[in-house]
Length: 310
Image 1 (tube, rainbow, N blue to C red):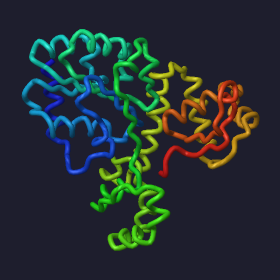
Image 2 (tube, rainbow, N blue to C red):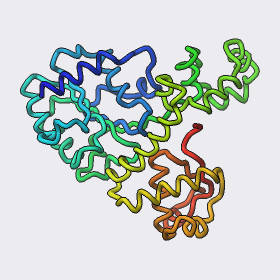
Image 3 (tube, one colour):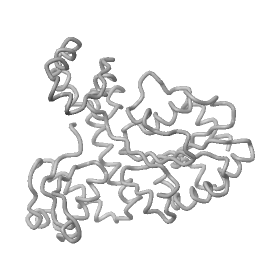
């Protein structure tokens, strides 16, 4: 377990608290069981480490951050971790990327029930359904969803321009005053053009020149790793989903012809609808459907868009 603490201390040392995502202030961190769901690259890990750095003494032994793709879990279980951590005086456990651990929901439920003095915060893929695991955590966990940077967040992150959220009603009634306030700080269209090129995932700041390579890697990891881990699909389905996304990227936004699209991909209508649903949950695309209920919910979406501005 010492290696887990060592890895945690190295990561906490590197994390910056200069900028925090919008969700940070919305989370009720005092709850005993918190789930944070979001796509790869949106900043879930950074947000956990920031909260630890700002609210705990990282070297006290009372708090521990662990990524569940660690090799440590090839010979140990989550229950082993919780038991040893509790015996050493541990009180708050941060578990990252739980979808990489088979049986995560059952063991988190057992930890929650067996160690009432312990708080647990865990993150997972946007595909993760907290109520879908082997143990239903929906009655225990408070779930939050983290999306990529909005344009307003991008202005703060890139230019240190802080702009409070504005309601639609306020925009309608006071748009001249609001607009004048904003253009005193920045040329909005210039900044927006930058945002739509590279401003969705916070990691763009690490290297803008290689942002698109990393964006492609993010998409590949979602389809090749996250989808099989959460939906238990096979290699054949993974290849078809990648082909579907490639085709969609040349067509969006559009109203899909399900029969034509399924023929182009070489899959059945039902498989196509399932794949569209998976990509939507993964935030790789966005589906717009008319409000419906019952069997009509299985019908085709009315519009298909790519998942984000980049």
